[in-house]
Amino acid sequence: MWTFVYTLIVGILLVLLGLGAFAVRGRSAAYAQGYGPGGGHFAACYGAVISRYETAEYVCAVCGERTVHRGEAATTVSTVLPACLRLAESMPRLRIHIDASQFCAHCRPGVDDPKLVAEITFAEGARPLRAVGVREEDLRRVQEVLAANEAASADSLRPQITAALNVDSPSREELAARLAELAKDDTPVELRPGAMCYSPAGPGASAEYICPKCGERTVYDGMRAWQVSWNLVGARRMVDTVQGIRVELLENEFCRKCQPEVTQPRLGLAIHLRDEDMPRIVWDVSPDDIDLLAEFMAGERKHSDTQDFESPLRDHISRLAEILGIDASRTGPGPGG
Ligand SMILES: [Zn+2]
Ligand SMILES: [Zn+2]
Image 1 (spheres, protein in one colour):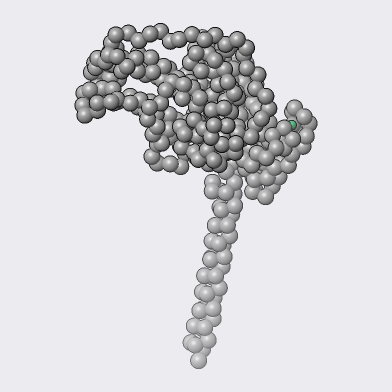
Image 2 (image 1 turned 90 degrees about the vertical axis):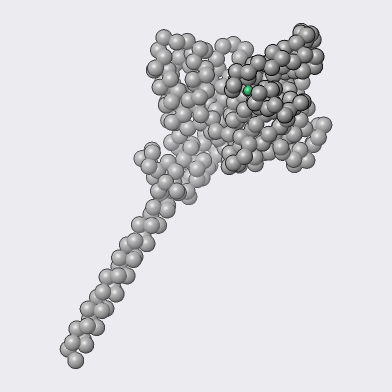
């Protein structure tokens, strides 16, 4: 009898202990989920625990409007923005402007997923470097580049700074949204009057293609010579100016050793998008196509073509949609518009 009661009591105690342990475990799991690396992204890095339900108010530096944000946007407003402003100020050698206008519901209505933009201006006339979705760590890497090259001019450090900013490629949805935004933006674009029109230098009789991979020289003449000496050279130069999206020029078909079976070599562009394992590949791209992409990614509103003629970027939406593989009918005024 006593043995039975004893066993019963020990049994109940063990069950209670087990439940207790389970409860503790359950709670720590919930904590981790709420504030750990999966939930509140910045909790660990910035020391401030901001739950996804907390809000932060953004007071617009331009119009004074107050916009309340939640979740990740609230974290950006309350911790990332001030940190980025401090970092930008700590680098007087660079002209860095931290643009938070996407967080103002008055200046930029209808932006669902606002991002901080760092804009670095280099030599006059050159396209400024824009890092959309900039974070503290990106600017810290820029700081390191400056510290490691104290004697160098800021302009000469542009390639290193571009790399340090490590601008991520956008996703297909983000590109579609940007394209739609461009389509419905009907504010007038100021174009440079009296653009100079000139023709590119005539093609030489023949042109030599030197393969950057294997070093083989392939000689072309006629139209192909023009393609090598004008298109390919221009495309290489343009690819270096594309920012905010990872692109690669595919010129392999021009090498007779690498691609002996190709009779009609084409110039291609591989576009790597976030969340997509395979790049989008567009064949028969021109330097002008790549320039369009560069302007679009830089947030410009006009296109200046290879002959220096300017037009609103909005007029090139259908080509941009084609290059990016985005259904143009989803972007508003549509093809040709
Ligand atoms: Zn505003
Ligand atoms: Zn080759």
